[in-house]
Length: 99
Image (cartoon, rainbow, N blue to C red; front, side):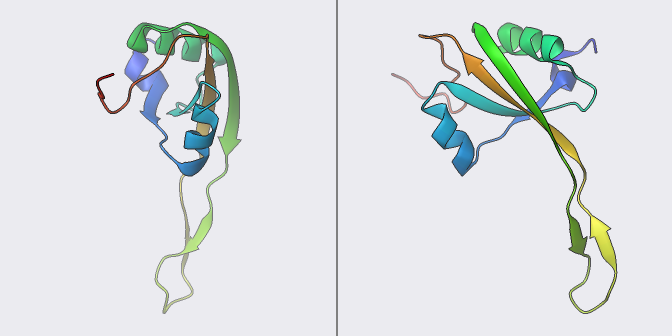
């Protein structure tokens, strides 16, 4: 993958992400074909931080009812998540808050 924005799709700001954020970890949705080396390079380049480790997981799409009144089923797309642990003293500011 050449483009850094294709590797990292978006940050995942969820309750679990807030809990692991206290441990200096951040969660991103990444491309399914991205490996840990590409994710590390993308995070370090885009945010200017030092990455210690990366944990990835595939999230299978869930089956959902398209219309509550019908029996038609659809699926949400499958994704890949990456939990990125940063070095001590480094942080990513998603909201642009001033210290």
